[in-house]
Image (cartoon, rainbow, N blue to C red):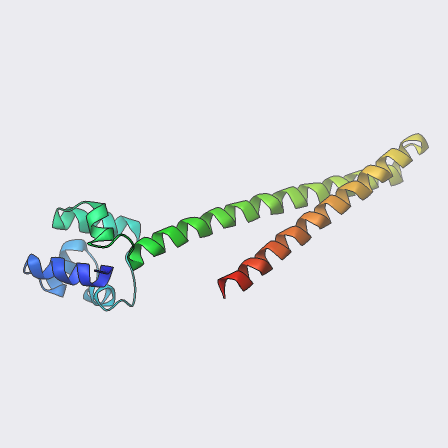
Length: 150
């Protein structure tokens, strides 16, 4: 049983109309209709409210009779998207830090002592290169994920 059928079944079991259920949850009747017609899914806070309203566990509400419903897939996908976004953000921060460090080293080499020029120029090139490589890796990773998704 998928999530839309589960919601219809629970609402019918408790002899509630869509409007009564919506009033009880503090949402619109259209939201209930969208859930029951598989057009939309509730967020995690609403799932908790639903489980309390119908006095069932979240497992029972989400999984129903089968092991993998559309709700379960959505929760899994949302979690992996969040992890991917966090990883991309970390890579982006590292790339920006490397480029900023390279720029600072470049400025120091231009404005600094002649004996420091070679060292700072090398650090500048290495940092710029590291930042650019990070950007390329991040871009390639995201492009591969797009192709993989299709």
